[in-house]
Image 1 (cartoon, helix red, strand yellow):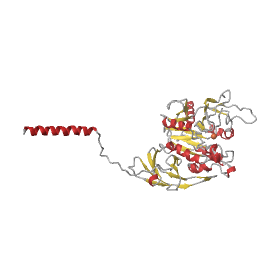
Image 2: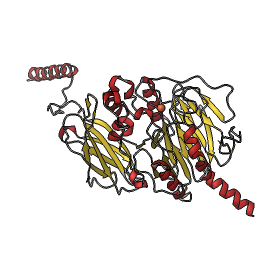
Image 3: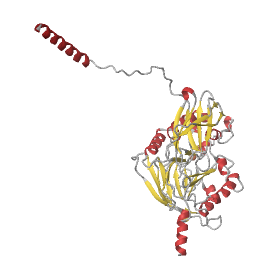
Image 4: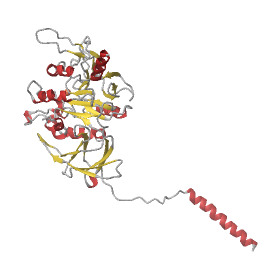
Length: 454
Ligand SMILES: [Fe+2]
């Protein structure tokens, strides 16, 4: 009996040793993965959003489906709505440019959104469904803080990629991009190869699908090429980038305005007629008196061609528009004019040159505290490279200039103050290579007047 018990113990010990050995050989997890085949990511792309109304309660969603029209609807829901989904219905179009036929370009406006709310949205059908999100701006008001990014002339080179990455990783966290023109540079390719519009759309999607880009047309958007039978200016641009121009009583998507938070943003077209009696002139003449600085204290103008630049390249190309509109910018106390076109950075002093007529000889810009600051931010990094040649000596109207790629950030703090900073690509994400506190022109004068009256 005793011998049997000893044998039992030996058997148990052997089993335990074997078990330990077996355990050392590894564990098979009990998790069972679904082995369904998955599809490659869809070619549907070029998703970008922009403001869809005048106040910021609307968003235009645009995207391209390459092979089939699919659906132009957008399904969207507020983050705080318990997934209560709504549907907006858009339109689809195609265009031809020389030997290129576009994919199906969808534009869908979502309106009546809540302010200051995160929304998810979904485009596509079946296995091409893609989901993104955006945050609507706060309700328009005089002291609403808001942060804009400034990017221009970006193209689609490794430098462009660096600019976009720097903008995305800037700790200032831009909420909306004010884009000052020259987008894809497709016109730099043989026959204005419009496939470069498609690749550009894919490039910017990583940011432009999540925050609005406010579009300004540049010279590379004109695509005027009668030698290829293409004589309608801005054809690819206006088919691909919808803007809410009718909401500001404009008759053209090339000039319009929006309100966003505490800013009133006027977009102008350097390459459309702007002389007296032209549609753009008449629109701007009516538009400027409409701006209520008690509601939107910050009056910002976006235009592609700078009116003050001291670089040799493109020198004085903006002079004729300056002659037409500078008086209004001073009269209506525009805070800042952002432009691109010159592939470098420059910031002006507050100056004006409105005294000059062709006989009085007063052609030197003078210090003018009612004038805007002019900032050239055409340094996005396109295939044409930097412009480095500057007029010498540096004119007195030029406060800071540097030929480096980068982007800008405009942080509006309240009705009185905003902080502008310029960020070069070669620096760390938080480095400000140039910066300036902007004092609001309207509220500064109002305060001074009331102090004088005391
Ligand atoms: Fe340009």
